Image (cartoon, rainbow, N blue to C red):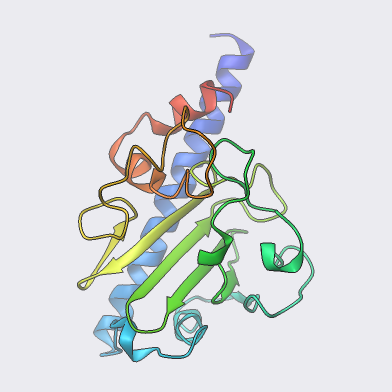
Length: 205
């Protein structure tokens, strides 16, 4: 195997390991909240950014990076609302769905960042930047992935019951026209296709 192939293989394995670890971490918090009889119903958390503060209590050493109205330095700052386009879509040419990252964020000890969408009565999303804001490429579907809590279960975006369940191919498409949601459903492919990261890295997006 050539050196470039070895590098690509290592990179893909690292991204997949980071994805699975983050998915597991988020699942564990939901389960602990449930075992403590804390509500998992989005309607309970009427105030934007209220939910992530509860979530933080279950993560040792997590740093509160605030929400969209906060103006914090890197590695916390990651919002287009602050005049930057730090997160791109899957193709890397268009700003990604920063409006789903604005209701609180947590920097974890392993360098990953969790972003929350706490949309009043009907929606709780958790997105994760696998390798942190200061590490590129900061692109949806590459190192930024989104999950949704649905009917008592954490699901990858694109799975049955999630808001984009019928749009997996449309919103995770390396040949798609640019749109800010391209990359949103890639968590579904990353979970269900063991070769997802290999394909992604070798396509050299």
